[in-house]
Length: 270
Image 1 (spheres, helix red, strand yellow):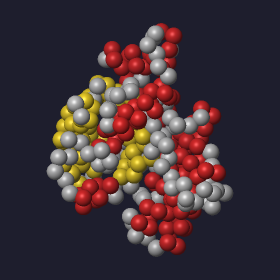
Image 2: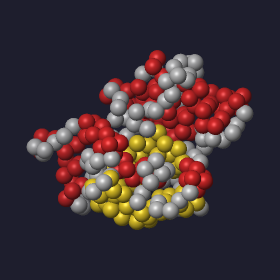
Image 3: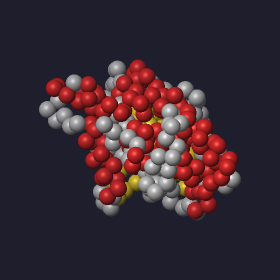
């Protein structure tokens, strides 16, 4: 088992966001989490590496277990060293070049000598198709290029699991494909991945398991061929119908806008 979540509870004020989530993820699994705005999917991702610690429950990554309610900074740091996160809005340092951004974690977290960190970072940026952009600042890159740099920054840390929080929701439609192709290539290496996304085609092709969340609980989960093609729960059926055939649902909301709303809700603690 690579990741194990036990009874994860999380509230923002009086609003219950996660209501006793249990989840086990095997080594090498690619788990895609779907769900409407406010379902708790982004919050769940952030509880795994304690960016937003849960109020109760525990998180296990590999052999390292940390209590959500009672944990120390060294325990959290040890867990974070086994994970890496790719954020919705890239989170690159604007005053550093792309190469410096990717090197940062190797130097400050892994304590690698700068020449070694630079060599590793150049190799990783080349791997994600940015070999000619080493000395560019984030503002000089497209959104897709910035997100690929964010992926390279996660990969150089050699994490046991990578967490992707809506990695394409901030991108223009024509840039989504290049980022999803990069993520697909990473998945083929066998690394454990948890991806919060609304990209159904990507989930069908890459996920080993799809989870549907709503109201802070896991409604159903299983292989893509089951959940995305023949979902059993009416809530999952309605959600997928809204994406695949909006004309059938008068309550349709553009899922790209919904993803942004979900992130803002979390950040506001609502």
